[in-house]
Image (cartoon, rainbow, N blue to C red; front, side, top):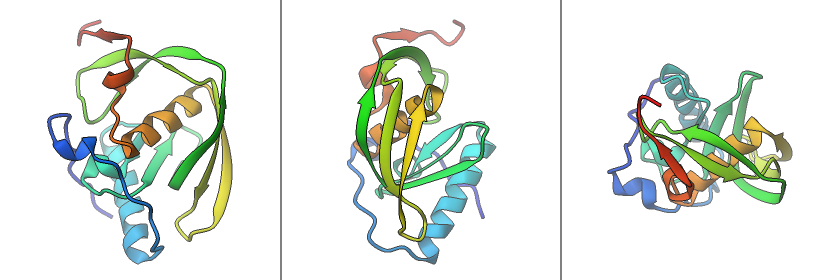
Amino acid sequence: MATRGILTDDDPTLRKKARIVEKFDDRLSMLLDDMYETMKANDGVGLAATQVGILKRVAVMDMGEGRIEMINPVIQKSSGKEREVEGCLSIPGVRGYVVRPGKVIVKAQDRYGKEYTIVGEGALARCICHETDHLEGVLFTDKADEILEEDE
């Protein structure tokens, strides 16, 4: 495993839409492992492949209850609304309030291509939405209704 560089918001790659993963192989497993190590090394809770310059529909998360890997995630259903502060490893020093669903149901694949469903509520729902937005080329600042200064 190795840490990878995280792109910042001035990099146009972050605005590109990620492609569907069709090949589930050792290279994908290495990407997932590297992304997880990179996320942890930077004190993050989620990281999308686009943030490390790879335009594949891949994201990793860990909200303190263990590693979650989502490949080709699709939000099937969402409900509720919560307005909370978010930050992003690609936009260091910036935080802002974003309205997101309070609950999401997502269909995704694991590193071997097996489909599964995950239900996220609260902070996990927020993280899932944040990372799936990255896969669409959308940053949290695009959706924030209030940006906070670094010292707030």
